[in-house]
Every structure is written in C-alpha cells, then in structure tokens.
Image 1 (tube, chains in turn orange, purple):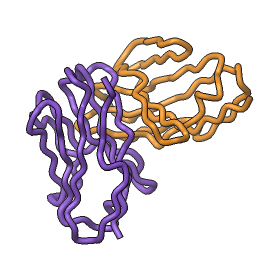
Image 2 (cartoon, helix red, strand yellow; image 1 turned 180 degrees about the vertical axis):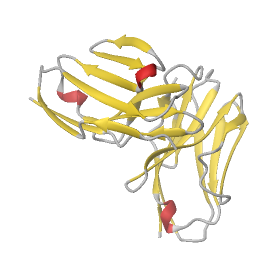
Image 3 (spheres, each protein chain N blue to C red; image 1 turned 90 degrees about the vertical axis):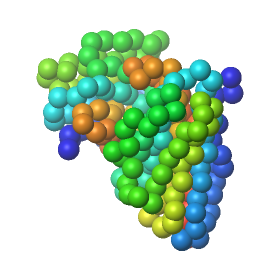
Image 4 (cartoon, rainbow over the protein chains, first blue to last red; image 1 turned 180 degrees about the horizontal axis):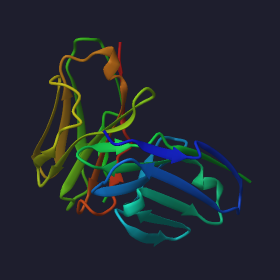
Length: 106
Length: 113
C-alpha cells in the first residue's frame, strides 16, 4: 500500500504564529485531502487538493503531485486551530496519515 | 440543513450481537462515506456511495460488516456478529461531489464488550 507520512508529529505554537505541516506519500495518487479533528473529536474536511494550491481564510494547501508531497499552511494561528491534522490519499485504496497534533497556546 | 446526523451517538453491546449504525446525509449530497477511527489503526475509509450505489468498499474489514443506502437520505452500517476489536468511533460524511469537501457527522462511539 501507499505510505503516508506526516511531519511534524507534534507542534506547539503561540497564538498568532504561522506553521507549515507536511504530508509525504510514497506513490502516485488520484487525490489528496486534508482533515482537521478538533479536541472534541469533530472532523472537518479542509481541502480536496490533488494538485495545485487552494486557500480558505487563514488556511491554504499546496500539493506537488509529481514530487509526492503536500503542505498545509496555517497563518495567524488561533487556539481553535488546535487538534490533529490528517492528510489522506487515494491510490487504489484510501490511506490516512497518522496526523500532526497541533496545540496553539494563548 | 442540520448537517450530517448519526445515530446512536454511543452504543455499548455484547460480543456476538448485531449492531446497526445510522446516518442521514445532508440533503442534496450525492456522496456518502463511512469511516472508522481507532487508536490502533487510526482513521480508515470503509466504504462510499454515489447516488445510493456503493462505489468502493475496499476498506470494509470483513464480511461481518455491511453497508446499505436504500435511499438518498439514509444509510446504515451493520456489524454482525460484533467483536471487541470492532470498538471504535464510526463517522459518516457526505459531499456534493467527490472532488468537494465532505461534511462529517458527530460520530458513533461503539463499544463491544
């Protein structure tokens, strides 16, 4: 199967700081998605981004499919950004990464 | 729209019993997804439907699991017989298109004892 590696595994930020989360995958994929799970367990699908760049408010994502990685940018972080960020890829099957746990402190 | 609605929110059952989880997608969404989350295995996509038809069930762990979508507003995930290793949070999500972001329900926390 496709290996999906996310880095860093853990990240602690001061409110207002910027961050970049990375997702590497081991093979060609049909699509890539980013998800956020808040500390109460609620899941949000942030981006569907098989290639290129998308932006949604303070969040943006870039996928370079030819180099098999995707980046999630969080600017001016807020405490509500805390939680775990997952990327997932769809090759012949759907694979999730193990996530980056983000804590934003006030 | 009230969003994706899952029921029950919590389920505790004994090993060997049948368990049925339910999901009502957002009205007008053509795609419905079932996910499972455990500490050991993380997040997994079990199956997804397009217009009530199962498209990819490669994530369904074994024959004890089955999913149906009898109409556009309702889906079930059934486990029969249930086993302790099925304990997990099961999420349902729906989206307008496959290439658009999906909206998740609150999840059903299943405990099999």
